[in-house]
Length: 474
Figure 1 (cartoon, rainbow, N blue to C red):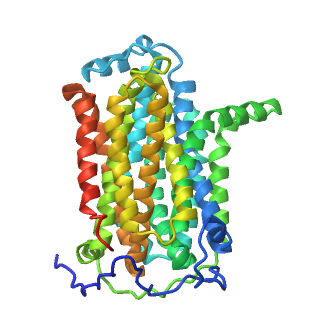
Figure 2: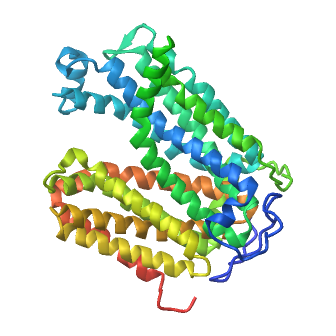
Figure 3: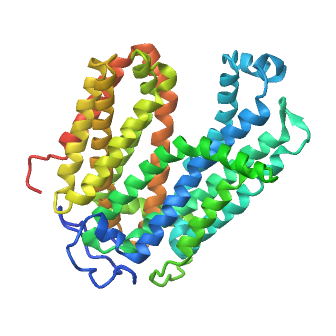
């Protein structure tokens, strides 16, 4: 396949934002050129507000989906001890896995759901990004949420009796397939949503918009996983009280449906697409060409990949950190992760209100330095609950200082016609960055210990901070 010929892209000067090929769509309002910043100014944009509400419902639904799958596994497929399911016990023994308790069995089956949810994210992100550029973005987002709402309506069918495979009902494997398809649809929603933001938000408010986007992502993760199980149980018991069964299946179609409804009302002007007759692979190569030509976009993307790799490693390392704290223990490692999420949300809100006018490279370098500082002290302060929580919160603030300016730079410096491709590639790389540390971190800690791993991550992060040369005038 011949490589597409790409016209060299002019590199934006540091500290400035290149003019967009098309301005923000109607809905940016008469103040599109003003310097007003902050969350209030961004939320005052009616069309962006609709997109944001759609993001809230869609991301909550994504978290509720995982909670529902684990809920169903615990309620219908792991109702007794593992010893009573000889097929699974033999499979676990073959894989050298411990399967002595009900919790371990639930974890094993939930892993199948996690894998089905992750594989499309790793394989299809870039391809989906190409189609997000080819198709109208609003229609892509509405269709993605609408189809996911319809797909989740099929979940009750998994409880019907039927044949078994590997000791489990066909319904469990049906949920695995449904999860795979749900994740495929999500890959189309994500790049279309990210590429739509610059069409709805004027450049002076872009940093605040990306701060709100990041804070919403963190908030949905914290809230979704925290309240998912209680909400499912409440819906189940409430509808059962009035004679309606299956109340736990109402939440997902409702959230995805509301997301589709909010986004369907957006008035968004997109440049007319010209049919070029190029292949998907040629357009993927064009997205890669953007990274080659524009150092600012390439640098920002590498910072995001590094950041998400560290956050994924922290997911594993937090178990060791929590186990050293009296009164917490390894099973409550989520407390440390939640504190990091709180730090990220607070950092995102702070950047939204105070970050306008600050140099993005210096913000990112400061964030990377805070992360390195936190990683070193996490190893030194093992066993102290308050110190560990404080450092996790500080690490979260540092993560926000990296993620928001990096994401804003990618939004600003990527040509409009290439945003879907670049965001699809970004989602691909980030999902790989999230997956590999989850696989490797536990084995590395087991072999070398927690402290060397924390120091190694801190050293890599500090080098990345120094590469930004924050002492120079930008």
